[in-house]
Image (cartoon, rainbow, N blue to C red):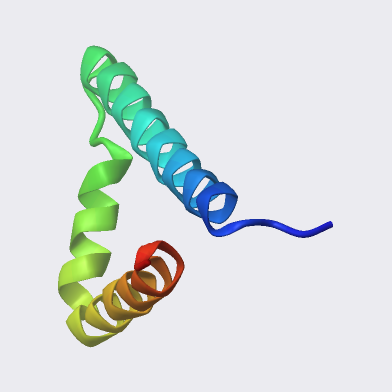
Length: 70
């Protein structure tokens, strides 16, 4: 199996879109039930570990730059 750059980029974009959709769905359900949404926990974790979040963003940027740059 040989994945092209376009296919890999598409898989990454689809995964991030799916995660964003699930977080929005969970938040809508939690707000309807009067509970704290999970996105508050994600936001707190990102603020608790800013260096790890930055490193993750850099790795994703390098991966996308490597695959998409002509």
